Image 1 (cartoon, rainbow, N blue to C red):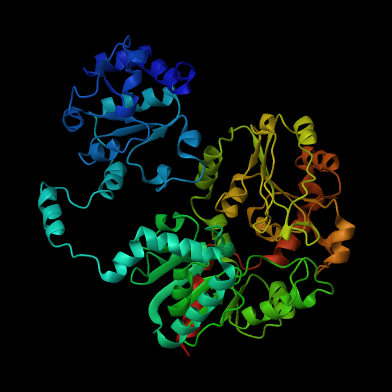
Image 2: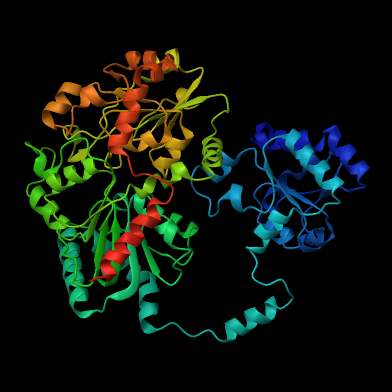
Length: 579
C-alpha cells in the first residue's frame, strides 16, 4: 500500500526537512512539488507539506520548466527537456535497483544523465546549497551531456517534423507484408514446426550464399549462442563502433543491449529468418562459440572465432570418452571448426591445447583475450563501485563470486543442470555477516537456481547479468571449480578458491590439460564448510599461494592488457585483407 511505501516516506522526509526551508529562504526560492500525472491520485498525502503543490491541469509543465531555476527529479524524462535550457538537474534515485531493474536501462545512468545522482538526503542538500552558491549554474560536464540528447537548439522543430512527414514515402509491398500481423503470426507458427522450418532455413541459407552478394561492410556478432551480450565479441564490437561507423553491425541477441553502444545496430534473434539471411550475406562473422554446425561458410566471408576461455578440461578430439552429447558430435564440431578463418588465443599453452582439441591448423591470433580489457581500463574502480551499487551491495561488505562450470554427467531431459553443493545455510552461519555471495550459473545450464527468499539479502543470482567481467571487478574473491573463469580472474589479482566436491569423478571422466591438483593457485576443498573456513582466513591466502599465483598468471595470461580488443580485430582484418 502507498501509505507504507518507501516512496512516500522518502519524499515526505525530504519535504519536511528543515534544510529545505533554510535553502528556500537563503536563495529566495519557491519550492514547487509536481507529481507525475499517474501519481496525482496520491497528491493529498503531501497536502500538509510546506511547499507549493501542483495539481494536474493547474500548470502547463513546459511553462513550469521555463520558469524554474533548478530541477530535482528521480527518473523523469522531463529532466532532459529541463537540461536543454542548461539549467541544473539533480537526480534522487534511492530505489534504482527496484525501479529500473538490474540490467534494463537504455543508457548508462551514472555516465550519461546530465546531472549528479544521489540516494541520500544529506547529499541532496549538499548539492542544493552548492548550486545556490554558484547562482544555479549548470556544470560544464552536464551541459555537454545534455547537448548529446538534443540535435537542434532552436525553434524550428515543428517545421522539420512537418517537412519530414510530407516527404514520407509509402511502405513497399515487401515492407507491408513483413509488418503485417497475420504474416508475423504465420511466421511464428512456421518456426514451431521444426521438421519443416530448419530444412527450409538451411535451403534458404544455401540459396542466399550462392545467389546473393556478400555485403562488404556487414559484420555479424554472436556471443554465448545468442543468450548474452558479453565476452570478447562484445568488447571487440564496442572497440569498433566509434572508429568504423560506416560498417553495418548485426548482433544476435535476445534484447537490445548492443544498441547502447550503437543505436544503428541491427538486432536479430538466433535461428530466425533474418539470422540465416544475414549470416549468408555478411562479410565478417565474430563468435565466441559456434554458429549452427550444419552451416558452411560461403567464400568471401571471414570468420573470427574468439572462443570463450582458456581450456582446462579436455575437449572434443582430446576426450577419451564423450558423454552428454548427441551422436555425431565430433563430426559436427569439426565441420564448424573448418569454417574458422582465425582463432583467438590468450597464451602459448592455450594455442597448443586448441590445436590438439579442435585439430585446427589455421591461423591463431595469440594476443590475449579482448574480454579482459576491462580489468585494465582507467575507470575500473568507477566500474566496480557502479556495479556494486547496481546490485545493492553495501560498501562494507566483501563480495564472493561463485561461478562453477557444467558437468557432462549432470543432465535432465537432455539439458545440463546444476546440482548446487554450495550450502547456503553454512554460508549464512560462517560468513553471512560480512560477505555477499554472487551466484552465476554456466550459460549452458538450463536449471533455474533457487535461492531461499530469506537469504536473498546477501545471496544474489547473477546468472543473467550481461558481463561476467564486470562481476569479477565488483567481487573481492572467486570461488570456482574447473571453469576457465579462473584464468581470466588472474587479471584482477584477487584470491581464487577451488570448490571441487566431485574432484575425482570429474578428473577421471573429463580429464584436464595440466596437473590440476598441483598447479592451481588456491585451496582445493571438497566441502562448503571447509571452503568458508579457508575464506575466513583472509590475507593468509597470499602468504600461502602468492608465488604460485604469479607463476600461474605468467603461464595462462601472459598477453592480457589494456587494448587487446583493438590488437585482435586489427590483426584479423589485416590478415583477411591480404588475401
